[in-house]
Image (cartoon, rainbow, N blue to C red):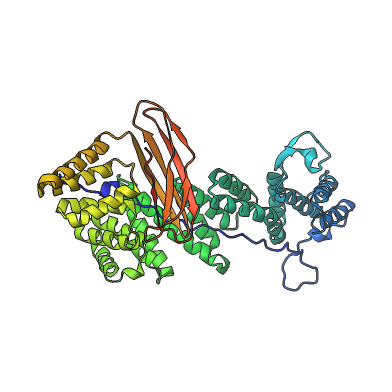
Length: 506
């Protein structure tokens, strides 16, 4: 029987996320009347009414590092109580500025709820009414910016006092794999400040983890647009350009309709933009070549395949596997096999690459290569029944050339492998692997193929390039009804990790 492993090949891509903290801009002072060539003067500091003067004193105390958390909350309530009464916004713009800052400082307090009774935050009117302090601060500061454009920088700096702790919390949640928390906190950060690319990068990262590539595409475009040419965001923008090209390629590859050509052309252009901005990055060149291959431009792809095989030290295992997939889809089987083999030198335990080469060795009858590859595959991925079909095929081929006890042993092994292939009692399917430096995340599901409920304990081991076990992580016990399945996620941060395996579940 002939076989092909391409249909089972799944590729993951690395998401470049903001993993470091964002630093706030200092709160700007209003322009002084004596400034020359400064344009219109922001007069928020010129409000010397009793309420504004008291509000400034309370805010100064609240922002003093020596003030305790309890006293800070009390002082902020006093500030809001003083500033939050009725006033003429056309005249008392200082009250808008100060009240907006007081509410923003409430929002920046980790233990303070953002929605609650007005009295919680110090408002004296309608104390039982509900208020969203962040949304209210946004409304007040937007009004200030709209009616007094000369105060935009001051309002922006106030906004960042809430934005920075919120976006940092969302980055931390994303890095910890807490997707719902990361998304909710990022949305709050976006409510108060929209002029920083970090929050869009978090939202894109959440979308990628949820395999919502269309949303990720929109958010990465926002990262690039908001970052502009600001050198402060250069690294973030480069990562967004790369990931935008990746998700666009994924969307193009998944499309089978009339829009596929347009999506493929868009992916090619995005990779060209990335390569132009980062000419020394082989990831970009590999991505461009694969996109060109998918769009039908095989000449450019062939040039990269040649370079990869001649200079494998320049490329990662994932780059080689990606190019191998593209070559196989273009019916360049010889190139595909060579690229998979070159990738397996760098990562000998990547199960989907082992699936492909094992199929090719089986079809070619190359037992000397088939047995090592398929045995490693079964060791790495022992609860995927399809792997035992390949193992059975290896014994079948070898048994034909043997006689006596050796032939009987291989036939017995053939029967055992066929039984595991045709009559499995469980099936583990890994659907996604994200490998980013020393961190590896694995998602999949286990199916109970029997009629009775069973509890499964899945133990993952994390390997270096030699196969040495660097660490392990157990999936919490999963009780699965007969004929049903349960998803799982497991992750670990282990220096030197390059691959994984899991122990038999039976």
